[in-house]
Image (cartoon, rainbow over all chains, first blue to last red; front, side):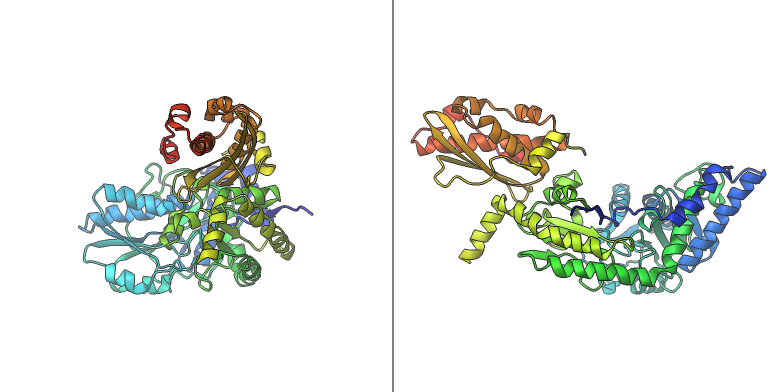
Length: 395
Length: 143
């Protein structure tokens, strides 16, 4: 029987009941501007400051080190451009990143490159990992910033952030990590891991869209990205998205409190998907098998194109995503899949299934019950598959 | 990006999928690198395309345009099939998102390539009849 299965939690998540309940009062009753002096403004201000404490607690930092933003992309842009401009004043214009970052990081860095910054793009290996020594080797006297994602959004690999943080701290280089996919899913302690700047987003952990945060370690100077009023201690103008900020705080507290049990549940579902799907002929798992997010499974099916696969899944009620060119709106398949060395035609046939703790064993069973037939159907009409099979027989 | 109901209908129930074993003409366009390959088989009798089948590796629009294009030429004289434009395929599908227009170009070219192959097999130079079939990949780079 057809059912609805949401398996695209790396794209966004369903807002939790507790999150929505916590937000509503700040839309309906305490709608005041936190900068205003009267009571409903003060209520809003208190809510924002309590939210800051909650986020700080989840990351292991002080509330004054948390700045609310409009989302992960803004936090990334602010951290990278803000740090780069501040470091440039000290004559440091070299940036280190990887070749499989989210576009919010990659395009921010490329914008700086056009302005004259020198960028080193570390290449990830075929498993979607980098080694701390790659970072150590790339650091120069004029290195302004190292920006490396905590966990990859497409293939789910988790990078050695603590090791990289240690190297950067020893060499006195600023270290930013885009942790949008990791927060709430893996244990993070910014102090222990020597992280200077960290970006996060609410809607990846059952919070609302349009709100995120930047952790900026005390003493780290970054230039403002949004000028205007004196909100966020004069560092980020714009009237606070109070309900969104409260929602973010509820979401991050909820997810960090239940992190272990949720991760265990998600990993079990993920492993079941991997176990089943890898039995399909000429199918591979993208990204390291062990060092990956509990909810991420990413596959490539030879001879199949990703978008038609997604449409077929959608017709059966399953929401997923792909790194094919047709879904990216460009001519090339995902830069992440190319970075791990997949040939174009294999990258076109990728499928990302990302589960959350809201998924059930029945969901997984349902995906497993329909996927074989869909792949078979698409391959039956694929001239590429016909060629692959023929070549396979000949060799 | 939104597909019309017609596109989704042809995607979910594509017409004329398969191969013709003793085809009179076969045309294959596109490449795996770009993510689209269309292969068309035609059977011709007395100047009429009596049967047509296709196999496509590609996105939803690629499959839907292949299906629609085969529908539009089945049972038609070769001259009519040669007049089929990608625009006519798009119209018949109630439109395509702009980034998917190249799929319709691919479908038009697949038909022309199959017809050219038919003429070549007959010992007739196809170029004066079918015209010069530009590289299908050029269509991708137009947008």
